[in-house]
Amino acid sequence: MAERERRFTVRHASGTFRSRTQVMSTDDVDRAVRRMTHEVIERNHGTGELVVIGLQTGGVPIARRIAETLAEIEGSPVPVGTLDVALHRDDIGLRPVLPQAETHIPVNLDQQVVVLVDDVLFTGRTVRAALDALHSWGRPSAVQLAVMVDRGHRELPIRPDYVGKNLPTSREEMVDVQSDGVRIGVLA
Image (tube, rainbow, N blue to C red):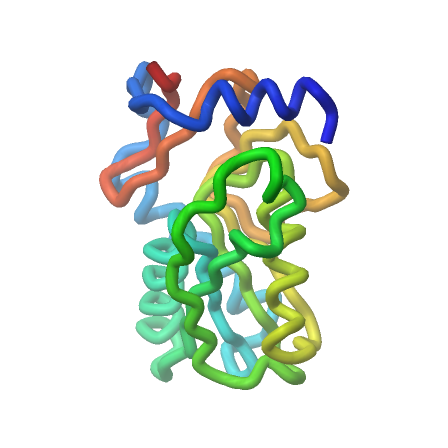
């Protein structure tokens, strides 16, 4: 990694999030989830081969909401899982590895369309790690990416298929996605 990334990672490794602005309300998040869900259905012509997988930890609640909305709209449940990518990250030596969260993949991923879900897309490194981790669980026919917030600053050629909100930010700002909304702030 570049020296600036090392400095950036260390600087933000600890601290308390201090919100400056709320950019999405609870209703905005609900609408974004519903819209992204409809886009998933449209693009995949239904939900027959879908598996929704949330990235630990921020993507899991959003993945569950998308899966619930898919089931509500289509009338049949969609498998939903969780994926921890901590040991697949390329910055594992530059920052502490947090205790592993649960990985639960409910079905074999061979020939399935996997919708990876995360809360915030930033540099793309977490998604790259998720793609590496997914292949331990099978060979999907396609992998699609859904994020609540795309904040830019990509370091890898990764682009989401479904976005709740595009939110340009500075590198120093942090984005916090919760069920009651999305906030921009800093670590203090």
